[in-house]
Amino acid sequence: MTDKKFDAVVIGSGLGGLTAGALLAHAGYSVCLLERNFSLGGAASVYKVGDLSIEASLHQTSDARNPRDVKHDILSQLGILNEIEWQPTGPLYKVRGGPIGEAFELPCGFEAAYEALAARFPDKRAAIKRFLGEVEQIHDAIWTLKQARAEGSLAKFTRGLWEVAPAAAGWQNSLDEIFTRDFAGAEGLKCALGANLAYYGDDPRNLWWIFYALAQGGYIASGGAYIKGGSRQLSLKLAKVITKSGGVVRMGRLVTKIETDAEGNAVAIRHVARRAGDNEERVEARVVMANCAPSVAAAMMDAPARAKMEEAFGARRLSTSLFSANFGLSAKPSTVGLKDFSTIVMPDGMQRFDQYGDGASAMADVPKGELPLHTIANFTAVDSGLWDEPPILLSVLGLDRLDNWKGMSKETALERRERWLDAIQASLERDYPGFSKLVTSRMLLNAFSMSSYLNTPEGAVYGFAALPAEEPILSGFPRTPATPIQGLYLASAFGGEHGFNGAMLSGAEAARMAERRLSAGAEG
Image (tube, rainbow, N blue to C red; front, side, top):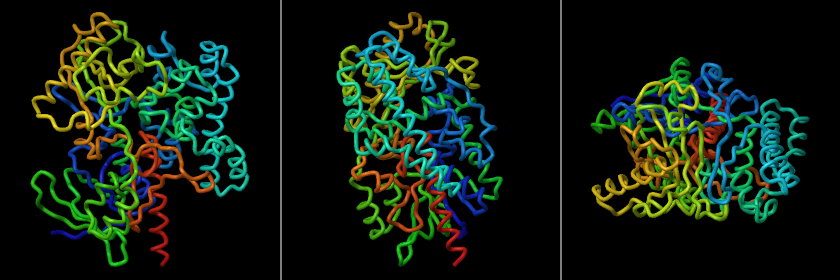
């Protein structure tokens, strides 16, 4: 067994871990990143099934070229912002069905979004303007406060506190409570504003209003974008920052132990070859960045540390999971009339926006009647750099739960997947005649797939559920990468908020905390 020493060890190569590792390496600290899989990126990756390239998770993200996008400063600091080709995806989404009925497109930009919404719902013009104004103000306030902290600017800090007034007023509210306050009874309008809720969660009654305002505000302000070449390009660029700065990135290495000293500090990890389970190595570390669920990290610790982690995180509710039906096509979807990048289809039986998550349990049985709410991702609506030639990917995504797939044989699960693929393909054929003739291959990933591939409990793709804050705004942001184990930080969506932006923000905040500890140790 070989012993090595690094300033920081990163467990996992998802975006949070890669971001944390890249920032620490760029700051001059020695970094070792260990990934159990044999490819980088976790959810930010592209892989092949047969001849079909499949985007693991990225549908679209907010455009990082906007200076106020949360990824902008991180990627600029690392010098890779302009090394990535951001492909604008046009309108944020098109939504149809359910309470909204005929298709509606939500454009990017707050003024354009207001004009489109006011034209569709003219009796709510004043409420729409007030609502979007609050979203924009909350989005801008957090950016101003972030800049104030980075620059040590009292003026910006004061301005940020003034701008954050709408956030303070609704700090403990759910999205449903704010929608009811502003748009009571206008279910179509609610759907127009929150159609892409599955990007964050599954129930507006339990989704934190502030998180919606920050995330959706970022999308509206910056516009949506897809990374040319797939999300793996972002992962590869971040990993390259680590290696160019002298750090180490190793794949196929399974971390089995996080060691703590007598004072409860994380001090080392042990890892083995994943396939053979041998060739154990021990790595001493001044900080450990856990790009994994707290429960996964806790399982690697001795009982006292494990108990602390369980007390801190064990009762927190997990986020939703997702399914992804992936079709390989012989021609681009535009040949059968599917031209939009993102189309959200609500079931006709959905009458209220607060029923958004009712379909999350649909896959507990074979398909019955209309499909649950789902999103069609047409990657060839932009210059994706991946599907210029067949087979061409079209993905259909929706809510799922691991409970839907528990307790059944492999044969039963496979049969149910095929039944759902049949139902999804039939729905696409009805809406886009000729679609079935294009299908050359297909596969369904479910909550069980997410749990296995991402090593996340219950297939929770967004970390912890973004529940409303329990304490007032003066208590501060309720989610943090800090853990009860000194020197251990959560560099993932479990340490902050959801999606690509949330994971990267969590990684950046974890790196900031770790750097403070590292620099204090150096001074001591």
